[in-house]
Structure formats: structure tokens, C-alpha cells
Length: 162
Picture: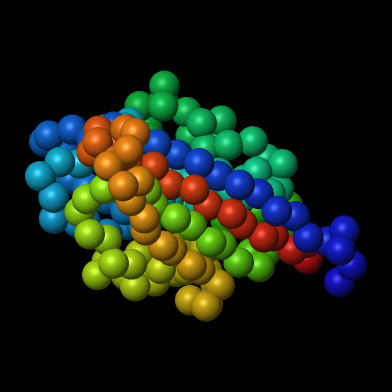
């Protein structure tokens, strides 16, 4: 395949932490005293992955595909939305080369949950597990994530044209 057949996209998402919501990251419910505030399940990891994939294909972003003004997406399962993103990418002739994502959160500790996050994302994208990387980092108590006001995620995706 020529270099012209590859596309790279970057995704970023952030949500505020709030009481009374489940914390969902990569489709995993993580025990914590707060969850992320958002129209859907506010899964920052999956949202960043979707934006990276859509960006690589120049298909906009998740706000355009799943607007928060549409009540149909209230409380939506982000992994289900990722399946729909993948359907759209396949319609356009793309397949995933790999995805690399990082969650930025001071707490809770995410390492025990990362293997399941990877499995969930790989399954939703229909790719082998070794094509999905998930990492977590803190910001050493700096900024809004370090102060435990919210969480963020970055993702990079490589697409190949069929």
C-alpha cells in the first residue's frame, strides 16, 4: 500500500467529575466516588478514540455525528456509538491500522482496568487486541485533572484505505 493510503487522526475529550454518576472509561464501570458529567455516558476514552478515527477519515467529530442536542443520545453507551463510527468508516473504505490512547486522571488508579478497556475497544472496532493501546497518566496534581475536577483523554488513530 502506498503512503497515500494511510490517514492519521487525533482525538481529545474532557469531562467534569460529578457526584451521582457512574465512572465509565473504555466501557468499563470503575468504582469511584464520582463519575463524568455528559449527555451520553461521558466515556472520555471512547470519545477521544471516536474523534481520532473520524478525524483521520476527515468525517468531522462525534459532536457532528451524535449531537448532544439530540435526546436519542442521552445516556448513550459510547461503545455502541463507536460501533456506528466503525460502520461509517467501513462505508468510506477505511480499516483501522491501530489506535493509541491515554487517559489523564489523578485518581482512581486505572491500571487494573486497562486490559478490559483494551478488549472492549478492540471488540467495538472489530480489530485484534494488539491494534489497541490504552495508557493512563496523572498530571502530578496540576491543572483540572490533577485537582480531580475532571478527566481527559487523547487518542491517535491510523487508518488504511481498503
